[in-house]
Amino acid sequence: MPARRTRFLGSGHYLPERVVPNDELALLMETDDAWIRKNTGIESRHFIAPGQGTSDLALHAARNALDDAGLQASDLDLIIFATLSPDVFFPGSGVLLGHKLAIPGVPALDVRNQCSGFLYGLQCADAMIRAGVYRHILLVGAEVHSTGLDLTTEGRDVAVLFGDGAGAVVLGANDDDDGRGVLHTVLGADGSYADSLWCRAPASGQHPQRITHEDLDAKAHFPQMQGRVVFRHAVSRMRDVTLQALAEAHVELDAVELFIPHQANLRINELVQRTLKVPAERFYNNIARLGNTTAATIPIGIDECRRAGRIEPGTLLCCMAFGSGFTWGASLIRW
Image (cartoon, rainbow, N blue to C red; front, side, top):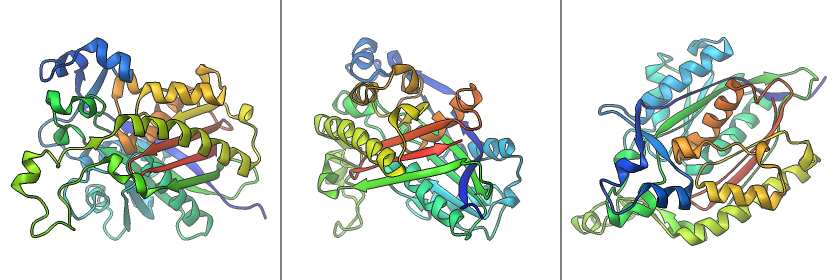
């Protein structure tokens, strides 16, 4: 009997209607379109409308993925929800999504691994499906950044990077001997660099309150980043974890038909592509249109590529990510 694999049964994504070009940000801070394009490769991003939350974006993406898979929400056995921007401090957004999908009783697991959250969630789902614990899993990456950015000159280096959006996939068991499915995933982390990219407040370890007036004055509730440190580690970690995944799976680099990297900065992805010596046309980038949607970047990229015909049954793709934590990962998938 062939070994069970985890197959992608369907994909979907959703972007808020509001498109925010660089020129609009230039009205709020000392920057301009040319500077943002040169340093990040970003031209625009999407921001939510008032009243929308992370689970609302996820709901649209999830419904699209379920429709694509030909399944109903009632067919799901588990929700895995990757996000750094849950609707509320607690509970996690997974249970909110389950309620909106009207599937009471279906377990929901939230993953808080920021930019690599989708790949962490994928390894969890893959292990559960291979073990026979669950048969159909909804894996979502969704983010709302726009309500948590310092949209001033002081915060511009971070604020210009991020956008809102959601991507989702439906995963299922494949017992056929056709080689399709998740082949291998490698993950890593190093918490010694945690303060190089983090949001320090509110913090449960802070006494007597999780957030103070001093924190607000210091803008500690906005994300903070040491850009040069993050850039250097992002390039080396994504390159190295990709090569590690390939070696452990006994797959040649040239066999990979499509690379879908996390979309943090176009300059990072271009350097990873060049250091791997992979033709640019095999590296997918959508950051120019969408900015960095953290846990949503890879599932959005997967869905866009699949709907554009760049992913077909049998296509071998590699997804890789790096982000806050630091955390990183890579996954090889035979579609």
